[in-house]
Length: 331
Image (tube, rainbow, N blue to C red; front, side, top):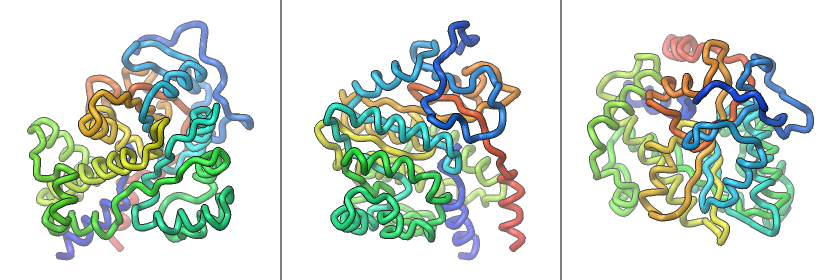
């Protein structure tokens, strides 16, 4: 039981997060009024550039905005503690809410149990992002500092968008890890397709991803439950976006791991709403050793980048996650 509890805690702390040569014209500067916040690798040749994965070419911010405006559903990835990623998300949300369009704005960072608090805050103080943060106890949530996410929420509130709490409650995720799919109500389990086996290759890739995310410290018998939890969260995020979508559709703010087109939320949306246009944007930090867009596919265990578009940004310093996990184990 202690092993299961540790594994469940690691799931919540672990991340959801996780090409040709640049053309000579160059993309326009990133639409950030104050410039980049992230201090590392600002001079990297990919910094600020947007890669259209299917077309195999760079596009500018306006072209990305126009492409996303044609989609029914938009999934915006991120590294959770990356300030520039949230500024770019805020710009995209503003761009998608022009001309009277009001797509639903869903957040991985809020679970369905918080929807009532979100709605009550909107009723009392419709445009007050800080009031919403207090209503959902953001400070005690375990997510990165509110100042990072505030621009995205503020953009949605200023545009009058529906704010959707999209994630499974943590207690349900923990129960799923510890007890398996039977921990969920049959209707929910069926809706999330947890009784349907994954293709063997996908199952193995997701197991390896969980093993690497936990730096090899996760007991092997816990890899399967962790994969189930990841599947459940992907499916639930997709379900919430579908059920909350307005006439213009919906936008999801989530980690890059959930934004993958091959097996994340976009794949779940495609399965649940065939024919609906779904587009995913990965926000990725540049790496000095990786000079071309295709070089970044390997970090996702894929042959090509698992997004429709990738927006490259400078980086912020990050503590070695394996060292942090080892410290957690010692405690």
